[in-house]
Amino acid sequence: MWETIIIVGLVVIFVGFIVGRAIYKRIKKQPSGECACCAGKGDKLVERYRKSNK
Image (cartoon, rainbow, N blue to C red; front, side, top):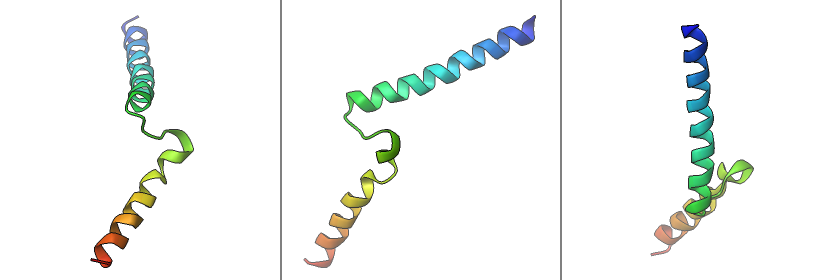
């Protein structure tokens, strides 16, 4: 009985974390999904270019 309650509680916490993170990213207008992994690469490239051409 206790095992079931603990497992359900952990699943609810995990799903809440995933949904909360998605909502946070939408509110802050951050990329999510497939675009999230490469979104910062362009900014880093521009920053390196600006530093090298000072």
